[in-house]
Each structure stands twice: as structure tokens, then as C-alpha cells.
Image 1 (cartoon, rainbow, N blue to C red):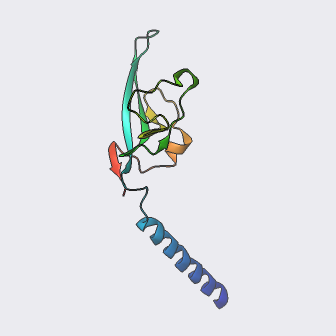
Image 2 (spheres, one colour):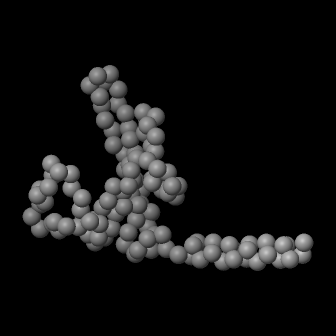
Image 3 (cartoon, rainbow, N blue to C red):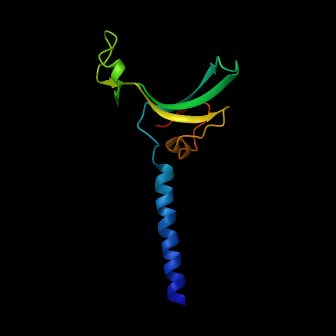
Length: 119
């Protein structure tokens, strides 16, 4: 019985060290943060205005690989980086329509309004 208790105490100590390491580790590289923004849309069918809140990664430098939709391929403004961008869409955080939250966003419960600097 004492051996089992000692094993549990040792395991708890290991978990405490892992937790502390994760708490001290930056959430992302310096110059990168999560930005939350709201979109309002009025639908012609019922005239109702709905809102959607989305999240995206933002960076000071273009570090995210571009993944343009087929209809937008080749449409890159002059002087812009054709292969990399400063932002990347994460997903929907919430909406007034009752639509669910994207699973990747739901797993990032630390998202709050505005920017979150992390580095």
C-alpha cells in the first residue's frame, strides 16, 4: 500500500513539473497573436441582422502559407508576398444564429476580444 502511495505522489510531482513547464512556455512565437473580429450580415429573406465572431492568427511578418481558394489564385496585390501572409483564419468563435463553434476554436478557450499578445 505504501509503495502505491509513493508511486502516486511521484506521478503527481511529474505532472506538476509538466504543468509548470507548459505554463511558462510562450503560447506562440514573438510577434504572433490571436485576433477576434465580428462580422454582421443582413439576410434579404427575413431582413434580420445576424452577427458572427471569428478568430484568426495575426503576425508582424508574413509567416503563414497562403492557401487561396481556386477562384482567387493569382490575385495578389503588387508588392505583397505571393506565398505567405500575415494572418490565418482559425474559425468561428460564436454567432447569434446558434451555429456551433469550430472545434479548433473551441479548444482554444483563452480567446478573448481584441488581440492577445503571446511572446
